[in-house]
Image (cartoon, rainbow, N blue to C red; front, side, top):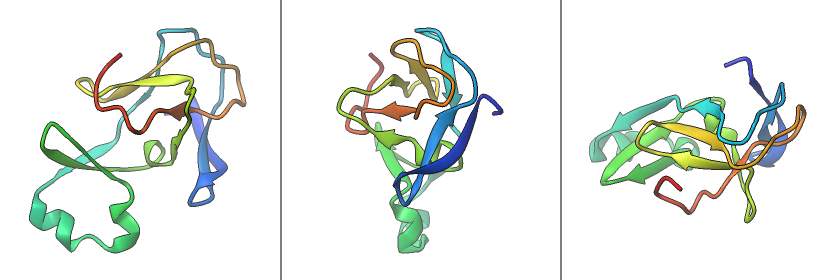
Length: 108
């Protein structure tokens, strides 16, 4: 997705940034995820395990760029896990870091 890019950040030194302005409610990113079995998860290198999340009993490996969206207590996106995407919680300006509440497991 050309609407965002990976740059310097706090998660393994990387973060995701807006390449354009987004309006509240707009889709910011669609997830690039791979569903994993418990066995596949166990076989992952430790460096990749930090990019996994479980939702409704299914483990997913997040790929680039969404694996680098950083957590924030007051994020500018919210997760729509059913449709595997992040939506703008408020207007987001070009160049701004894309953040989410990594502790939430539901749509807002």
